[in-house]
Image (cartoon, rainbow, N blue to C red; front, top):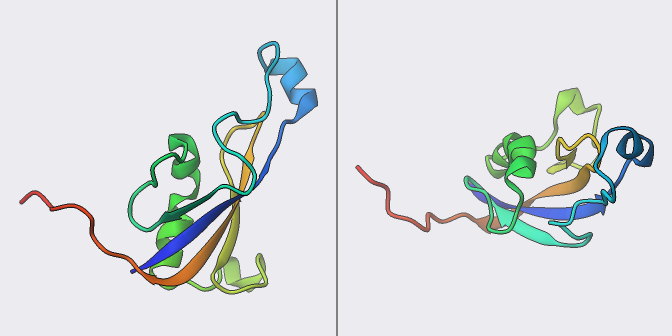
Length: 112
């Protein structure tokens, strides 16, 4: 299994929906910043939002195990890359996931 680099490409706010449904003063995601990076494989990296991880982990897992393309090659042109977002409908965060050549290693002792 290889490590996958997760980069925050963009934090967004849908102002129309935020005005209609959001609390007063809602802003783009306060947890993540554009340009922030994480390395992942089988587990959520420290500092990454739990909800974002739930939205992207299946792509991270696939890339960590060698996937090159998704959806019959009609989505992302570069192999080993996925562009995903969290599931916050008012202020989604857009991520770039990239397969790396860095070997993953288990950093815990499994309980048997």
